[in-house]
Amino acid sequence: MTVLDVRDVTKVYGQGGTAVHALRGVSLAVERGDYLAIMGASGSGKSTLMNILGCLDVPTGGQYLLDGTDVGTLDDRRLAILRNRRIGFVFQSFNLIPRMSALANVELPLAYGGVKAADRRQRALAALDQVGLADRVDHEPNELSGGQQQRVAVARALVTAPALLLADEPTGNLDTRSTTDVLHVLDRLSASGRTIVLITHEDDVARHAKRVIRLVDGRIVEDRRTAPVDGPPPGLVGLR
Ligand code: ADP
Ligand code: MG
Image 1 (cartoon, rainbow, N blue to C red):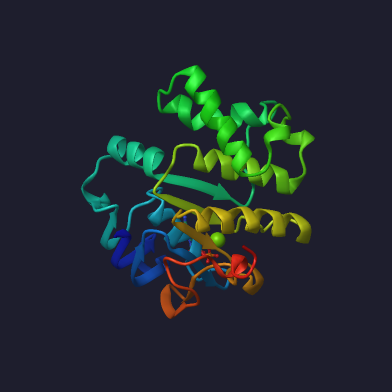
Image 2: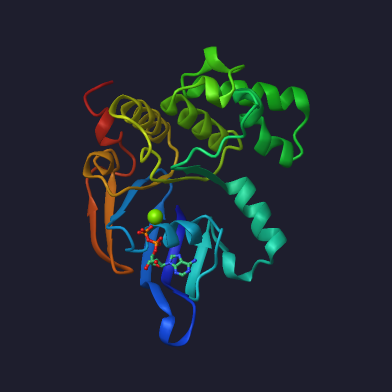
């Protein structure tokens, strides 16, 4: 089953002589359960592609189907609903709300989704448990390490049970130890069947994925499978 189906997508910022061709015809199909790393130098189009995959922006040309829905046919309201229900985002800068507990931060997407308080709390606690933070649920972001904050952000991304987890340089602001912790969480989520797209410019991070694509100047120049879609991710092989 194909979760992401990107067909000859282009993205142009601006017009005329100052136009920037950020994506120059990208085609990509991602199966359910895959763990994809998108690599490329700064300016190669990684974030532009992530914004399109996450329905935060629309392509200039081409087509994008998410879970079989042609995103180009949706108005802003439907796009927002699709984004809230089907996609969990993790950003380099965590984007947690200050002075709100880890639990309240993780409950937030459920509150927008209209889930009742008791149910919200239970699901948020389960998500925090999944990322190994059951003992930190009442801590506020400034009382947590960078790695713990990013794990809260991963729990927040997961709590809606999205079809896709999209992470843009999730370890970009973390030290080695915290990077290991966050990648281990992603590896375990992958092993449990989640579809993950990870954007990174670091080989050590990309090594955790089952498939690696490389962008140069808005084009895919390499597409390499390193582990089967339905098997455990490379980081967990031999560990279980
Ligand atoms: P990466 O994430 O790989 O560093 P980006 O997708 O952010 O690359 O950027 C790709 C190209 O598009 C770059 O040349 C960048 O300067 C340009 N770009 C990105 N966002 C915008 C924007 N909002 N307006 C104009 N140009 C942009
Ligand atoms: Mg970027």
